[in-house]
Image 1 (spheres, rainbow over the protein chains, first blue to last red):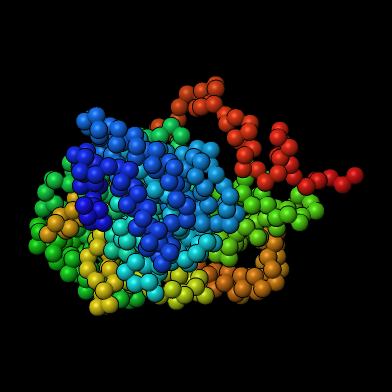
Image 2 (image 1 turned 90 degrees about the vertical axis):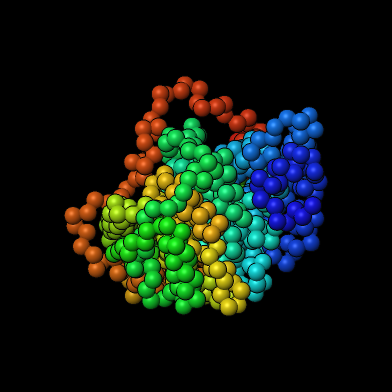
Amino acid sequence: MDSPSLTIDATRAAVQEQRTTATALAEDFYQRIDKQDPLIGAYLTLSKERALARAAEIDALAAKGEELPPLGGVPVAIKDVMATRGVRTTAGSKILGNYVPPYDCTAVARMEAAGAVVLGKLNCDEFAMGSSNENSAWRPVRNPRDLGRVPGGSSGGSAAAVAANMAVATLGSDTGGSIRQPASFCGVVGLMPTYGRVSRYGLIAFASSLDRIGPLTKTVNDAALVLRTIAGRDPMDSTSADAPVPDYVAELEKPARAVKLGVPKEYFAEGLDAEVRKAAEAAIQKLAKSGCEIVPISLPHTKYAIPTYYIVATAEASSNLARFDGVRYGFRAGDARSLSEMYRRSRDQGFGAEVKRRIMLGTYALSAGYYDAYYLKAQKVRALLAQDFAWAFKQVDAIVTPTSPTAAFKLGEKVDDPLAMYLADIFTVTANLAGICGVSIPCGETKEKLPIGLQILGKHFDEATILRVGHAFEQS
Amino acid sequence: MKIDEKDVTYVADLAHVELTGEERVRFLRDLNSILDYVDRLNELDTSNVRPMAVMANLTGDATLRDDIREGLRKSLPHEVALANAPDSDGTFFRVPKVIER
């Protein structure tokens, strides 16, 4: 059996019909990880014991002829910012180098309850702060399509693992583009659900008003399957919404004809790579041919999104990361003579440069005398950005743009210029600020065979429409 | 220049990070470059805009529930709660002395 090309449905069917076993599949994936991952660096920790125990349970069900749950026997992997009981969870940081959570992230628990076999934990930028995966404290991830290039970030390991067939599907997190941009760079599907759609319980917090958990998969159908599994109210996260969860898979089959798609002129402006522009425009033409109505729109505050994002996100991060103090868990510097010296040294030695840079920026933006000028100002501009989308969605059902202004860049290319790195997120941060959903789907390649992604943005809690449009594009 | 060395030291102190000399120089440069970029927000007149403070309007009334006396679930057992501690005596987290006698 050719397991590399398997989708979720095909994997589950193979286990259900006993053409293979969940155990054999897991072992097959571990072999491929052993062989390929030294070059790529997608995995930080393997959870073999847990995976094989779950696989055995699924195999027992299949042997009895019982119907498997929707992800029965499917090998998946989890970004290392989600807590996994008994399995080391580092958030890509030295400060959590030995942290073994006593509980499971809700999204992970729901994946396992639906039959998934969790192979391990995936590399990422430290605390999900980065756009290239080069901020991992452990090692960078390399793009499986070109080992000299980055996989994107911060969910670089999650995208690379799917692209290199080292997992059928993965979970990532997206605070400013961290699912969609790596999906685009690695040529896979990446879905960021609406704020509140998926519980964040057990997600190590970066910026609490922006963070989302979502799937990276080979197909839109797989993304719909995973979303259906992890979405919905969770009493452990008071910001998780009680909005009903549609059957996203069934929704895919509804026709995408007559869907009104907005094309914002601000996303096709200066700075957009010519090949990416061409691929995105061709994709829009293709969607028009399949019956979607294309409507030119304007999102006039787009150019203010990056500065707004980097104030809001760093302010929230500086507050969230205050909990890492070397007392209850995590790294503690050994040489301190007083409590405050222990805090300072533990944090200095435990955090990497980008994390410290963002804590500094966020602390400054919240500090006395600067709060109004930076944080309050950014929250006001954020309201204007959200209003841009609210007005646009009165005219259109979804919005299509390139996911990233360029294809994957080279390792080391932007590491010395934080601002240049931040600008890699220019088309993705807006959706996080506005709370809306978005998906990136492969829409072509550059001359150098690097994947290009098309981003489809949708209304609050309207994942069904963007998935339907993505599915129609994928099938056409 | 928006901020100088003194600001960097002050903010590092607020954030409880102890920066090396090299980091101080680099962060001074980086933070000034980022804050210069952030300045473009001042092109916008936001005097009549209400800040977007919370996302709760998206997540609905489910954020409210009746009090539960025992909590949503039982607290972690003592040894589990202490298992990740860098230093503990089995009952408490242990930290360097706070007050000198």
